Image: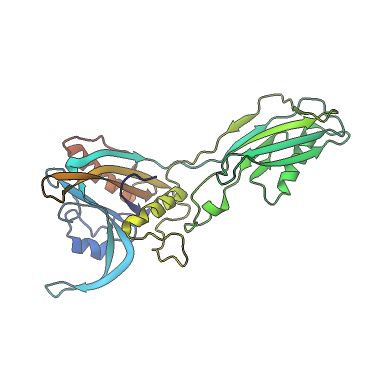
Length: 346
């Protein structure tokens, strides 16, 4: 949840445009910038030099080349065709930067529960009960469970019992887990289609979180824990960092700051998502304050802002060029910030 107005710039995994040299004027930038290219602009809206400092420019902007282009003729009568509109962050005033942090992409991983081989004696007619308790369904008022059952047959082994449970899960069209393994039973959470299928999904990204209990029913109709040779293991789901689903949700949450507020009613007149499905985004976050004169003109106050940069891909390309300029500028600020190494050379 955002606690301050936030600018989100989303970059593609592309190489910086050669024509945009250090110090290039805004007209040159607009005429040559690519869609999804991220640039640092100085206080005069020129392309920042690699060694930009606070002394050279006390304020910077982060700009992204949008999908929109336009034609114009300047005052000198020069016509420019196909100039690209820029998405520009709020001004980042060096004296008011409060934090500068980066996060490399890490992949998400689903919840996994593994049941080792059954060591107890398997008696024909014994009912084995596998109960899955899901913890991620916040819209459900209580615990949401699925139960799968298998009745042992004469001659069944541990592997056959676990295979019987695997088959029941496999035949359940609404199962929220997959079942694998041979001598073991490995349960893995499935991706939730309503939040992981499209950049236009309405549901926010979430993952299946569950516990699993394997019991058997004795002759007195009591459920007892199944014994295993080794301990049952569980690895909780991890959402990772910079996944395309997370960046998509960031985009939806920040689009209101660009003037779009309706994300529910249809048809929804919003720009196409700039997120690439399957992308791996590295993140740079800058928290900063913006000074403004109070309504009574008595003093200058500040308001809290945030600028987030998400760029697809870790190797050199434009991410490294951006990081070089931000590191140089941030290190030169009065409060000084350590350099980031979110992006690395190929």
